[in-house]
Length: 355
View 1 (cartoon, rainbow, N blue to C red):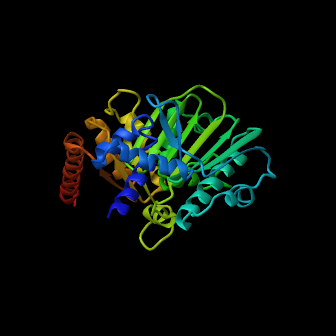
View 2 (view 1 turned 120 degrees about the vertical axis):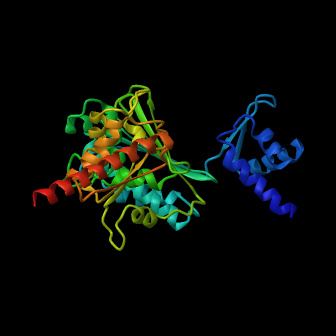
View 3 (view 1 turned 30 degrees about the vertical axis):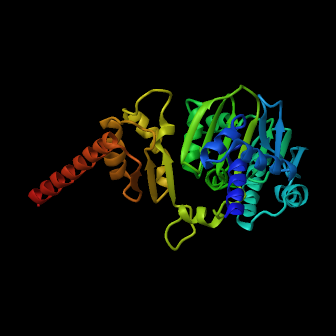
């Protein structure tokens, strides 16, 4: 029993040290109801095993995960650069004792993001870094190109680079439809526990652990940085993610889940038809669209009407549903659906009368 608890304590320290580098000892002590001396015993054991690093003196001591494997390389970008060879020859051999499901996800994300750099970045250099710890694997890919958000903005004629993030979140977005399907970023951002992309002074972060989507300001710099992180004990599989966005008994990418929050700018409210139309762009490429209203406090009636009545009539082949809507949002949606029903009844009566 004591051995099992000790293993749980050490695993907790490893998993939480990033969130509590300065107070991991106190946090562990409080969580498990053990003495500070007992926690230090486990901390020192992890240090001796080469899994944890302690820095600073006793009063200001901080802890962090020690890399088990770490590799960083730069490559000139050219059409001769092949992402599958980079993975198989240069980076995969350095990773050890990784479950197949996690390795498959790393393989997918790595090759998709490096291929994007080769084909789309218009840069001259790519930096690739992979770090494995006792808890997770982190993959960083940076290029010195035009910047992904700026390129999408220019290609689609968008008003703002932030529109690019919303389009990426929908899926099936590519500036080269002949050679690409626009699935790589969409699926990578949902396979990894966290997916972070920064470019042109802005970034977006998706956490699959809590379903959170964040957009924020970053340091203005050229190029694009992608950072992907996944736990080594993750049970997720690439197939599960693909299946989640496919029609039943089919393997096509026909369903998407769109975070409505990304349609907002700062503190503005989602009230207008123009905002709804921006959200609805390219929905016709899917058979099913689920609107995730998490983080959205309220929506205007015109916004709801444009989505749930107008677009629905114009695109009957697209099935739109919603999730994570609070009472206020649901009220606006229900009103739009009710108006749609009343309009349909009125049209049916008018048709009957004319006949």
